Image 1 (cartoon, rainbow, N blue to C red):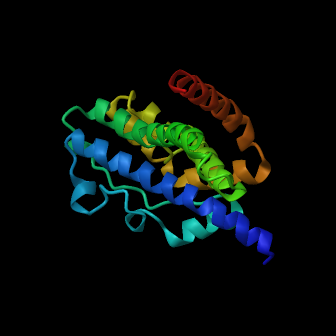
Image 2: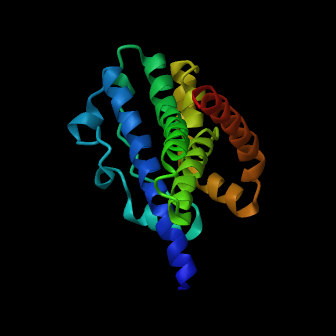
Image 3: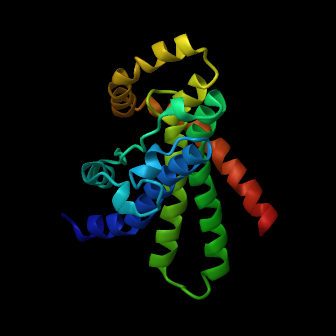
Length: 206
């Protein structure tokens, strides 16, 4: 393996770990607020990356650009308001990734003069873009991604059950979209919308 490849992966690692950990923590935290303590009882309501990172998924993400974390267990039957709970829990991970990207940009603008190095800039830039990528990818309406659950939250119970049956095919569909390059047609408008939102918020703050 070339040194450049190792160096690039090392600068990406903080962003990947942060994106995964905060994304899954957000799901667990909001689920707990909505009445489901499943993730909390299993020690998943934490930003500790050891609780969330799947080693194989992490390696796949570093080497191939496609990977996964350990999904937070959620029992929607425990929600005090089921549809609201499903919607908010599904949105929580994406919202957290966008928030982390916003805060990372602000932190960089406030601190770059104290750390005037290309390495610091690259790490912070990767944190921002990896979190944007996580948010955009998870918003795709493909089971079991969060985007599909945002749609499922508005379906009647019987139709939601049928909808969830297609989760078993979701992974194959994602692989097909990624390998054929078709995923960019779905992801590009989502990424553009997220970047516009982030730029608007950062502009207000800075």
